[in-house]
Length: 112
Image 1 (spheres, rainbow, N blue to C red):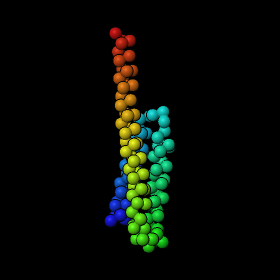
Image 2: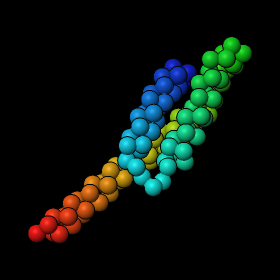
Image 3: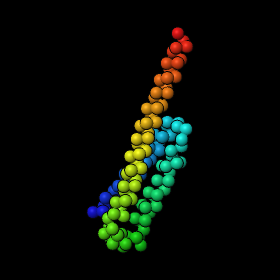
Image 4: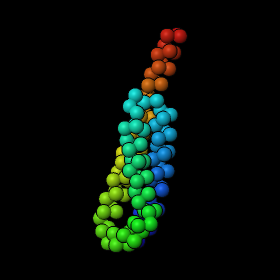
């Protein structure tokens, strides 16, 4: 059970992080969230995926499934970070929209 969930969630989380990376790149934020949070998370994820595919680890994996809390903590770590990044992205998008609206209204005021 744990290994199936673990193996299925890691690729899904990778895709989500890659999408977030693209979305943050489009914003042009002053903070480089890709370098600050997303790239380290992707490297961590990649290391876990490599471990899952190692032949020597496959024998250990069946024994480690009994340590559910270890797998759960990895998944929770990624889920919490992804959720936080998604909230941050929404906040940054709203901020960018407000800034554009203020600039637009300032330009309209000077034209009148």
